Length: 448
Image (cartoon, rainbow, N blue to C red):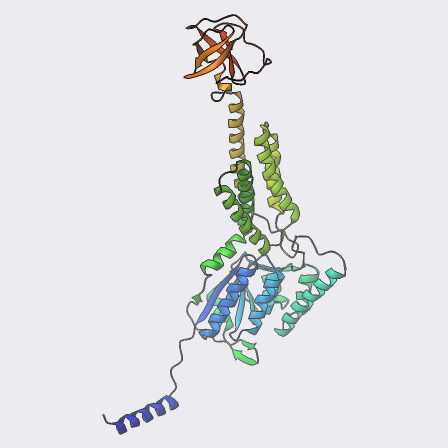
């Protein structure tokens, strides 16, 4: 093929590409779970999913939502990402038994299509402080509440939903079922499963930015997206159960390190666990009373070991740990975000068995006769190496000691006696069967 032929081929190919555009890529739907506490991990994950949907030109994004609430800052980040998304976003409260409480109610209202599964609920979005307490009844509370009311109303009005009912979720902590939400115009549809959801979306009109689109999701299962390992770790440590465990175990390890210094494993592990638990607290609205009870409970358990108590302090310590776990977290909206009862019970039983076993060993060791050190020499046999008249030398436990007779009576060389007491570096020896001297007496030092 000469040069002119090659040029002609390029011209023909360009014309074909101009008048016959490339076949578009197959349409697909991205589906991703938004489960657990609304925090930094969920915010980053939602943003990554929406970026991928835009980059790969997905037809639709479906977020399966199940949350008790979380941080307002993370909620704002998620809702902003949804509103700015070029790809339509469906937020579906699913499966049955799931909820879109507190911050979840805002995320649901920000969606282009708000859907719920039967047996789910939405609402209870009254603001509380990060410490778990209700916002103080001051002008600050009014400012916070009014700001959130304006935000949820703007979402509802933008998506042509019932703004008055949405407002009551913030001002009155209103919580409603899926069927009630649909009848009141708070959500757009109720769907039992993903297949029925996608069927119900076909032909629905939504607005993304300045574009109006008619949804036509393809049939078949969507492309599932899950959290990365890093995001899973962040979400894992922000779980109430795990944060409770990390804080309790971390404080306990640090206390043991302080009690028996010299190593570094316990102290380092405890510090790492406390830091991870503190990160969980940053993700979760916590109650300072729960933190104090948790730390006090661990401290009382350790104190019972130190004083050699009879277990009463350990019972108080376990009670403090249980109470602290019950009130440690509280979700925005007023409802408690508790550590699970089964987790608290299991951990309390395990700690209780450990400390009562340790306490039993401590008490038993106190009753046991000393077998090492100078105190362990009392009652041992001593062979007279030099007449005790009343001071001389004896051989005890393979060593030569300076000794004195217990009652002043001489003991001849070659005789055996029994160590009655230790006075400094001098053994007080009595003849077998003799009277043991009282604890007083003078202290003498060995001459060599």
